[in-house]
Length: 66
Image (cartoon, rainbow, N blue to C red):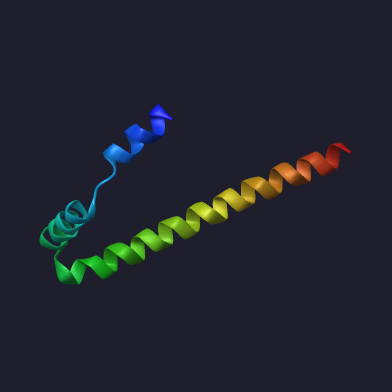
């Protein structure tokens, strides 16, 4: 229970999120954000594909042992 309370205290609230979004806009600019999000999406997709490949290899190895 103590861990959950500490986690909630460290999470940003509404006004902090507004400040974070404004800081990102200032740092990256309006034109760079779509590129950044596109790159983030590609990275997440590649990570998911790699995770699925490893899972499939493990499952195939387990079936091979049987």
